[in-house]
Structures are given as structure tokens and as C-alpha cells.
Amino acid sequence: MLRRTVLTAAAVLAVVLGVQSGAQAAPAPGAPGVGDSYYPDYGNGGYDVGHYDIRLRYHPETDRLTGTTTILATATQDLSAFNLDFALRTTSVRVDNRPATFAREGDHELVVTPARPLTAGRPTTIVVTYDDVPSSVVAAGYTAWNRTPDGALAVGQPEIAWWWYPSNDHPTDKATFDVSVLVPSGVEAISNGSPTRWAQPELRGWDRWSWRSAAPQATYLAFLAIGDFETYGDETPDGEPIITAYSTRLDPVSAAAARGSIERTSEIIDWQAGLFGPYPFGARGGVVTGPRELGFALETQTRPVYDGVAFARGSNNSLVVHELAHQWFGDSVSVRDWRDIWLNEGFASYAEWLWSEKEGEGTAAEIADYVHGVAWPADDPFWQVLPGDPGAARLFHPAVYDRGALTLHALREAVGDEDFFAVLRAWAQTHRYRDASTAEFVALAEEISGDDLGDLFRTWLYTPGRPELEVAARTVP
Ligand code: ARG
Ligand code: ZN
Image (cartoon, rainbow, N blue to C red):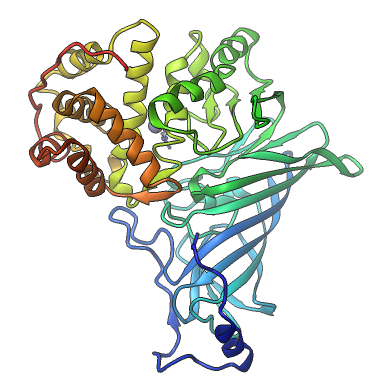
């Protein structure tokens, strides 16, 4: 997402006349990645996406997905060619009203050569058509698209977009989204944000579902849940949609337990807004899949997706608190680099501890003391994984979650409640809808507290072994 996309009159004239402004290097191919520490070829160089318009037709019985995605982008350099991240069979690409040539490179790169080079600063329109069976497509060694008995789930981190729409697949390039899906009547197609069309009959036996994300959204946070769901619709006092959906494959008691947690979504968001500052989005909700269909929960923007198995033993409010806390920490403020993953998982985990305390269960200090002193003994290999640099293979290691949360608790003990919560709010506010790094978090905490916190973060994030933890009794303000 780029802030300035409006062309000056001079630039328009230059484009119309085919004039190159100034003496510049010849157009060159964009980089095949943004240089992420763990995933150097994720995302692409040379352009910035503002909007994705994704139009799909999906047939659950065959898993056939056909689609057209229109990408509104702006070149950030003169480009002779550029990459999209995509794994499905592509049937055509057009760039700025002309057919483009395209070629697959590796398992998720689509190299596009437009008929005419792209000019830095100029808005561009890319139209990609495709037709494939996503469950048959392997990339990065697996298939993130999840075919279920009654539909499919496109929910994953850090890879998922490749299996359903072409993109600049890195959290540093957010965009707005329209997602429109034609599915057999009776099947539901749920995505992020607000519904703009609800099961609109369009063909004999086919309905269209359409959804809009009006706030900037990272590519991995866009989702699709297709299948048989029981859905509930309500709205907030401000008129924002609250939409929740429960797979009909859940047994009735698990479905009831799931509802007992998910139907508290708006209440939990309001409580979090009191701690973290205003909810970054409007629409909200949740989707619960059949048991073990997904295997995890994900903070898909505005509407997290939960595996039904999470409610097999009753309500699971801390999971809902976790995924909703990600709306501030992960979704609105995203990682600059996947190495910074503790900025997502440590924060969402700490939110669970705050919820426990607020509910009159264990206090955050009691939980910190237990996690530090009992759950992970000093000689456990857990303490060798660094939350500030876990490695791609350990992106979701428990150390990222628990030691990440302990890092925040250590910060809170060091600076006190007033500064600690001021840091969390300033973090969410300063980097809202953007991305940020661990170094920026440390700098913000130092600025607000006036303390030198270098040793604290070095010890907790980047040093192997179990640090000492001072735990005092505290309450949520
Ligand atoms: N960000 C998710 C969460 O904290 C974790 C996703 C794990 N992904 C996976 N493929 N296992 O809830
Ligand atoms: Zn998480």
C-alpha cells in the first residue's frame, strides 16, 4: 500500500508522450523477493500493491478453482519484468491493457514480462486468470490449501496466498481486498471484513458471496472458508457486522462450547481496546472449522479461524483472546521481517495472561512465575530457542509464545504498569496498518520509560539459557 499514488500533471503528460523523466537507468527486472531473513524470495521487488480484486468459482466436489485476480499496483522503479508469488496454473496475464508473457520459476514464482515496461510511480493494472485443483499443488514442500469433506480452507501462515490468488506475498505490502466467490447453493463462502453480497443466486444452483476488507491487510491474513456452516449475524452499536460461523461437522456440544467463546468476540475486543487502544478494524467475528480440519487457529484479519478441536473440552476463551489480540499485534502492526514473529506471538500470548487476571483466575505475575519456573525447567531445551531469532523451522516454537510473553512481563516489571501499557498503546498507534521491527519496539520502550533496556531485551530475546525473573504482584489497570 503506497500513500501517494496520484500522478502529477507532468507525470501524466510524460506517460502519454512516452517520455522518460530525467536520465535514468534502463528498466530492469524487479527482485524476486523482498529479502526477508527467513524467506528471502517471499514478496517481490519493484512495485507496491494497493488493492486485490479476487473473483473465484469453486466446486467442492472436484476442488476445481477458477479465478481472475485484478491487482492494482504502483511500480516503485522502472520495471522490464516483475514477479508475483503464485502456485496455481495460470492461463493469462494482462498488464495495463496488453497481454503479458509469463513463466513459472520454482514452485511459487510467476515471472511476468509486460508488453511495455512499467514506469516508477505510475499506477498499473495486472489481471491474472487461473484454473487448477489447489489440493494437488505442492509448494514449499506442502499443500497449505485444505480440502475438507464439505469444502475448503485457505488459512495459513506464512504461506497461503499462493494457493488461491497471485500476490506480493509479504506483510510489508498490505492492500485492501474484495473477495467474491461463486459456490454451489447451500455451500457458504466466508472471508474477511464486511459482506457486500450474501448468498446471491446467480446461476441455477450457484450463489455468489462477496466480502470487502477496507483496511490494509497482509496477504497471509486474507482467508477463505468454504463449506457447510451455521452462521450468525449481528452488529455492534456502531453498525459494524459481527459474523460468526460454525462448521456443521462439529458435534452439537462442541459447537455449543465454541459458541460460548466465539460469541464473546465483541466483548473481548472492547476489553482489549481499553488496554491497547482503538480496535483497528470495524467488522469482527470468527469461523470454527470441523474438528482437526485445520490443526491450528489463525488471526485472519477481522475474523479469526479456529479449529473445532479447540473446543472439545469446553470453552476456550484464552484462544479467542489470543487471536483477537493479534488484530492489534500482527494484523494492524505487522512484522517487518518474519524473524520478528515474537512481536506477534509474544504479545498475543501476554494478552491471554491479562485476560486470566481480569477474569479473576491466575494473575499475569502468577502465570509468568509458573511458565518461567515450573512449565519450562532451566535445563529444558526450550531455553535454547531465541524468541528474537527462532529460525524459520521454529517460527511457532513455544519459546516464541511463552518466552516472548515473559519478555513483555520482564519489561513490565522493569518499567511499571503505567509506562508498560503506554508502550503497548503507542506501539499499536504509531505503526497502525504498517509493519515494524524489534529494534523499533525496543527504541519505543526506551523512549517512553526513559530507561536503558538494551540488556533486558538482549537477555530475554537473544541469549540462550533461562534468565532470572523478578515477579511482583500486579493487577491490570
Ligand atoms: N499465528 C497462529 C497463532 O498464533 C499460529 C499459526 C500456526 N501455523 C501453523 N501452520 N501451524 O494462533
Ligand atoms: Zn498467535
